[in-house]
Length: 265
Image (tube, rainbow, N blue to C red; front, side):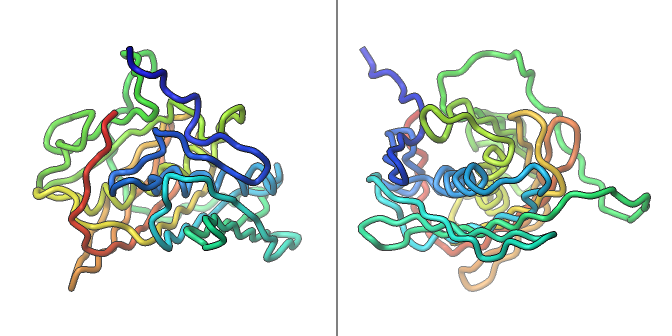
């Protein structure tokens, strides 16, 4: 009989977070970048979020592979002003930093009545929220050369999109927040924009997520906009959506590393 799926990606004791088996990423016996970056964003927002402030930018630096072993997360207030708050967070293993995040909060206010040009991005319709249940901890639907629930639909030269939903919380006993859903999705910008006919040959060193508003609901969509590469270094950009429309943008920088192998679900 198979072992039951863990209740969360991490179990927590104070500032110590122990990854469960589902936290494994596609680059070996290491923690997936999306749940590691998501954890950093989650901790910052849980401990420093304010109802009057919008989490407007998250930047995650992935310094080195994070082992499937306990890590600690500490936060520092860089600035706490009337209109701007900046919080840094660092994940450490064996006293060495493995990832760092910076979150920028901006005070919300009355929006001006402006009509500023923007590029219109067409996004495939989100999946049926009452569709087939899944045992997977993270549910996604890829669009490109057809539609798939793995990444095979991205193996072509044309446009690529994805709808993502976290089915399992990041931290056991602690509910996901709208910002946490977006923070997890931010890392997907890299795989979405850098995936081609030969698969994913780039691993990202960082990603930045910008949000004009928080997502409504758990479904996050991503639409690839650009991919540029030279001498083994790549950049990619994407627009992020919820079910009601665009919510922000993402950018990821990456370097050649042809070792992508999704873990078994």
